[in-house]
Structure formats: C-alpha cells, structure tokens
Amino acid sequence: MKATEFNNLFDTVISKYHKLDTVDQPFTNPHNKTDLINHLLYRKSWIDTVQWHYEDIIRLPDINPVEALTLKRKIDASNQDRTDMVEYIDSYYLNTFKDVTIQPGAKINTESPAWAIDRLSILALKIYHMREEATRETASEEHRANCQSKLAVLLEQRSDLSSAIDDLLGDISQGKKYMKVYKQMKMYNDDELNPMLYKKK
Image (cartoon, rainbow, N blue to C red; front, side):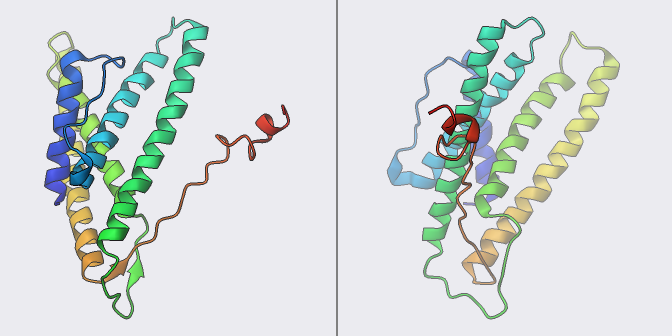
C-alpha cells in the first residue's frame, strides 16, 4: 500500500465516525483479518478518532469530576489500544519484509513504519477538524482565514510525510534500510511496575 491509500482509508473512517458523531457508537470493521493491513489500519484510525473526541470532552470546563475521572480511564485504555495497534502494524511489516536481504551499510530509521503511519492518522484528524473550522459559518472571517492558513500547512505536512513513508517502505523492501519492533513496555499500566499500584497490594 502507498501512503495515499492510508490517507484515503483514514478519511473514510473519520467521515464514518462523524455520521453519528458520538464516542458511544458501535464499531464495525469492514475489513476482515484476511485483509490484515487494512483491518489493522481501519481499527487504528477508529481508536484515534474516538480518542480525539474524548480529549475534546474532557476539556469541558463544567465537566462533572466523577465523569471526568471515568473519561480519563477511557483515554488511558484508548492510549494502550493505540500503542498495541502500532505494534501490530509494525509486526505486519516485519513479517512482510522478513525475507528481504539487508544490504551492506543499511541503517535503521529513526522511527518504525507504524509510528510514522500513526502520525499520518493523527494528521488526517487535524485536517478534518481544521477544515471544519475554516468553513464554520458561525466563526468570524478572521478565524476562518487563520484556520485556512493552518489547513494549508497541515496538507503540506501530510504530503511530505506521505512521501517519506513511501520512501521508507521502499527502502526497507529493497534492503536499503531495516526495521525492528520494540515493545513500548509502558510501566504505569502495569501493576507490577508502577510503584503507586504495587505498594497498594
């Protein structure tokens, strides 16, 4: 897949979410696991989209503190799901390129393919919502103009990042670069590693 296809898939997910525009809506994945990369990317984008709106809600100044704590727990769980999906996507690429002969002098990239794709997924959300603001009729003309300028930057950023991802995947497929999958090993979610949790046992 090319980055253009990633962008199209992310845009499709975001548009589908906004038909109901609620964090409580059910999730269905139109791609089954035989189409693994699309299945993973679709799920990843949905997680990002729901979490975007969690983050909006929790910033309401008059939110009930109990509701805010419940929402914070959902955000924590969503962050873990997001990380897990990134690792699944990287594992997919690691398996895809497992028979590639690494060329002499090949180097590892500063970030893995999936973490670069993660940035692309978040950019799709920024673009969607900035475009909303750039065309919002209830906003001032100055606000819309400022958002239109920001939207142009985001679109340029997506173009640049898309090219970089295509180059990275191309280089890995030819053995010019290689990749590794490092598990995140987040400590604060683990009751054996977070001292605030294991001291309560």
